[in-house]
Image 1: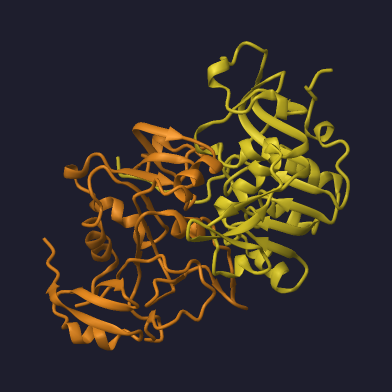
Image 2 (image 1 turned 180 degrees about the vertical axis):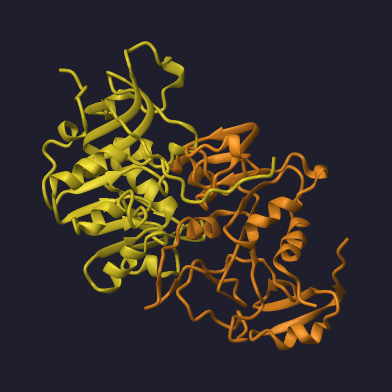
Length: 220
Length: 231
């Protein structure tokens, strides 16, 4: 069984260590926050529009138009939160002070390059903060589906969409498994419950190997 | 000479067609609503607007796109505006997509007297095309230029008659950098107070950057994505 969005997020939450400063992108990455448990009380979420210490969505009575996250969603603060300008925010990001960034992607390749912001002639939305995040964070994990809607692999030898960044992705968590990117190849280290490593291998276009200790994920 | 003007129309005096305007805000959060309405009423055209986003179809800078007053946008993300996408794909609108952190730093640099700077953001991507690349300590960087504007428009929570500003929560965003980079910076505030009311330690933008200030009215503060918790 392939993982659903929440399970992908749950698996990624294991990569979040207590004390980390973490930036979560829009989509599946946002869901990761729901799985950061009480044993990781000192995790601080950064939102690049100018907030450290992002809390959950507000209750109806506490909605404030002046308090949003980078996805323009209404949010709340937590004790110890800080507001700052966009320049300060990206000083944190570009300066390598953010421990972990999780973001979605349209493609990644064996060199650790990522494409997630543009489809020429079709979609003109812009890169937002993604290029800064992949250029600056200490550790970047991609959360995405293993294949696109047509069934084409999104893990490639070489990205063919405009790049967001080069040589910047260490790990990819998909609905089929967890893969490291190392020595110009993907390495399958975990597979979704019920899948064989060979299934993941077959769905990966770029050079890929199965790690000798590859395991099947468990969820509780 | 007092910096205080009575309203947005008076604050926008001197804005002409073909000028470069800088605007604070992230999405619809912390945008200079009153000034945008005045610019629409003035009908100035061929504007180059520097703003992280382009508003939505019927609010924020989307209002100036509707009336086709904008010739070029310098932004990082314009995905919330379908009109923008249409005008761009039709060739009616020029756009320079700039990474968000680079945009913030370009404005900061422009206001701080720094003509250009090297950044790792965008190396090896379309953003790097035509830009000088240089290596420092084994890592590649590209040269990005500072941005200055003929006018800058910011929105603050509180301001005093000397132009000192305090922003509210995440409505700060691009406003402090935008404030530094305009030849004439216009601040609209929700609450205009006398000097001394804002404590020196709490001021985010010193009044030296602000030439005109007014108390805005009828703030809509539209929410783009209302997301709620139970309870």
